[in-house]
Image (cartoon, rainbow, N blue to C red):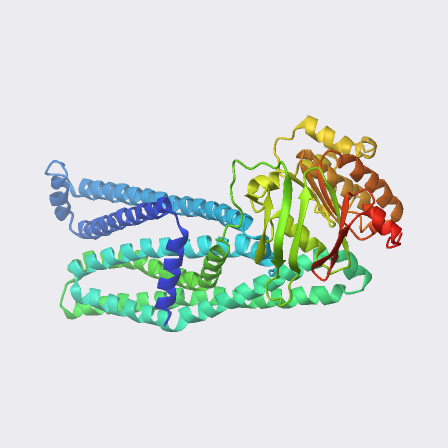
Length: 585
């Protein structure tokens, strides 16, 4: 059955809306009712006008009701009635236009506000939430599914609501004019409705699912194509990636073509039915022995009703199809909103870091992995201390850093600041300057990448960070200085320059704690040596945690934590390792 799907989707939309947005839907409903009332008034005056054209004397009675003097000549009666019809029709269409604008502006406002709300929920989600997901899913949900839920789903609901109220009111008018005719029109409408519910809507739901899947896959292939373009060219895999995108894009286009073509069918059926009903009405009235003069008013009203109802009925069916196709997107947005609801960070206004960071019996396991990445880790880092972390690939170094950053929550044990404050807090993040191995740079200027997300850049902090990261000489050589664009992901810069910008970004916040996650591993020895001089210079008077792939990189650290298979093998110093000949240059 399709109706439970529709009612379930509407319930999901209601859940996603705020109280204020639900009240705005009352306004949409009131607008629809007002437009419907004006449609009935318009249809009534057109019936009257059709009668007056044939029998002007009837018009005198109606004009007298609105204050016109008696004894008007037939030409004047027809003129005044025509003017009244025109004014009513104009008012009706002005209100209808206002209704359309109100509907669309209200729903589109809900659209961008919900996108903002959803993105906030994504931002608040646990870092582990992203470890099992493809980034293209989030992009598709925010830019594709949410857009379809509002522009397709909610606008469809508003249109269906408006047209349905008009349909009911006008059918009521037909019942008043001619009950037998109303039953005939209603019967045809029920047949069309059943045809849509039983046959067309289920197909549109299936097409919506296939479209959603094809859109996600084509988006994913497109991102992979642009992100891995260098490797694709060098490995000669252009055709493979283009063909993969083409396959999903062709599938999406084929489904879209079927949907669009099928949407036209109801209009054709309705037009044929309208002409058939018109002929049937004339035959029906003739069989009742009504004269052509008596039939004129009814037929005039019927023509207007057909002119208004048939396109409206077509729109209702089309909007039902659009809504049904949007249901998979509504379901995915609802699921994503619920899944990302879990906030992982806490607000601790009184947070201070004065003494130490302590890990107590910490164990962590990634989702869908049986083996622990960290196993019973316990050690303490004093404020102002420089700690090095070293180990083979897969020993748990980066996981340890992510736990210290508060991005990953251990399944066992705790990480506390001064034995009381959680690391999973906004205030702890504000005290950290983080330099990753793989630097993310936006396609923007050097200064925008250092300030990263700040609209109003503090010039003094910017210059201090540039000087500390030893970027001044490089920036001064550029024609546009720190206004120079770095290209997507910093493609116009060398590896060392990108890392220095990352260090400047970390220093721009003037952090108490600096964390370097293998920040020099992708660099050659000479560049690494120069960057280490920068790192050692900016690390003065700060708490520093540094992951490295070579022990010699950590020679200035107070202590070195040696990791092995997710556990601490030993905590020692560079001097002891050197004496034991464990240092390999």
